[in-house]
Amino acid sequence: MPEEKTLSAEKPATVPADKKPKGPEKGPFSKPELIVFIQDALPQAVVEAYSFLGQDFITANKAAFIELAELLKDDPSQDYALLEDLTAVDYPQKEKRFELIYILFSLNRQNRLFLKLSAAEGETVPSLTGLWELANWAEREVFDMFGIRFEGHPDLKRILLPDGWHGHPLRKDYGLEQQDQQWIAENIELIRPQSHLGIPSNQEIDHLNSSAAKSTSAG
Amino acid sequence: MNRDTLLSSHELVVNMGPQHPATHGVLRVKLVLDGEKILDCEPVIGYLHRGIEKLGESEDYQKVPPHIDRVDYTAAVSNVLGYVEAVEKLLGIEVPPRANYLRTMMTELNRLASHLIWLGTHALDIGAMTVFLYAFREREEILKVYEAVFGARLTYNAFRIGGMAEDVPDGILDKVREFTDYFPRRVAEYEQLLTGNRIWLRRTVDVGKITAEEAISFGLTGPPLRGSGVRWDMRRAKPYAAYADMDFEIPIGKNGDTYDRYLVRMEEMRQSNRIIRQTLDRLPDGPVRAKVPRVIKPPVGEIYHAIEAPKGVLGYYLVSDGSSKPYRLRIRPPSYFNLAALKKMIVGHLVADAVAVIGTLDIVLGEIDR
Image (cartoon, rainbow over all chains, first blue to last red; front, side, top):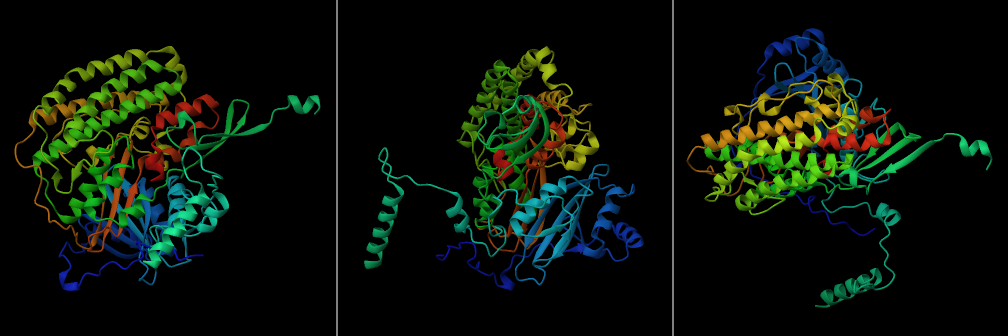
């Protein structure tokens, strides 16, 4: 297979540490009583809790993640009834490259809580489909785009890309113009046998491309 | 073939779409039917996937909005508002009040335009053709305003990080005021055609019902959630732009059926009109754009900002690594999660109701597939 163009895989110009723009810093978690409450019920659940730009983040422990989500959802004092979104970010340089982000919303108190979970390449993550129906399609999208598997998902398959596709586009090592050439060759037929209405056929386009390549390499 | 096989009933799998006028784009729904009755359904999406989240990672912050315009192309102003506000939050930029008011005005006009498309196409799907022509008559007036303000009719690249690109041209505010004068009468016209119409009632009442608990579990937002009786609107829950100053009501339904969602959206149009009037009456003077650096490099960090788009809660999760391009741009599309509830809403109904329910969810495939 020819080398693919990988636009985004080019390393972005790294910003020297002293020239990085100064910005808001992580602060202490704004609701310490929530952390106390969680630690009473699930001592192992919280790895880290912090606040950033008014957003409360809890980095959770995978072993107690479902219990934590269930506690936050069903306990009347917390009542995070809505899972607003579920997504992931890829940090290839980290030991556990994926960071999953769960956004919970409390309809009664109108505030958000962000749960974070790390996952290494090939590691499975517990599925929240038992708690929220939204998790079904959201987890399918994360699987499709990042290749993270969710344990306990009823029907984990690709959702936006075709079923037989290889690769997970939102990973950082997946190029912007990268395509699954094998899938395309097997599934897409764009054969126009002869010129029609002045539109060149595929063979003519190939011929033009190859002659253009020759002339540029000669010059 | 003997007589028994000819007359026996079979489960039949029918592909509705991807090229079907009532699916509002390239949506394919696999329907398992017994006669006219839907036994099971599975939406198949992705035909319009353009990788906008991936594209966002390859563009400078200022160059992302044209891509965002194409997410929900019937409400491009709302889309861009959510994105630029997320970036502004990350940068810590205060937007001048006049810009905030103009943004609110333009976004509410966009809600009207989007709801008018919904109304026209939804009614057309069910068989009421006249409403379509009426709805597009008013939408045209809104597009004329957009053409004067943004210079485009569909994808506007409406706002800049820090405010508006420029102030609105002379005379356009009078045009908007004139529009808001007669628009409530036009809503009454649509209602006259549909609200008490016996055919409309037969096609919508008790069709596609969903309870409040189910709606919350599926993450339905916008009119589909409010139609089930949950009074939740991001404009009130987490006010953005100038919504904190606005006086408006959040209509809710009772039964969570297609008819209630219709009533909710009709009332939302009246409320949007009220908000536009308020922005016109109280529009402050002053600059329309804050001082913004030429190269935008937000500090390292992440931000989630959500707005109430016409279809529901539209959220942006932005991760910055300190460079001039977003490290990760996640778009939380309302239509995507609203469509996920389709199966729950149409199983047990007739095939013709599938068209009504797809219409009432007000999905846009550009947003679902991104």
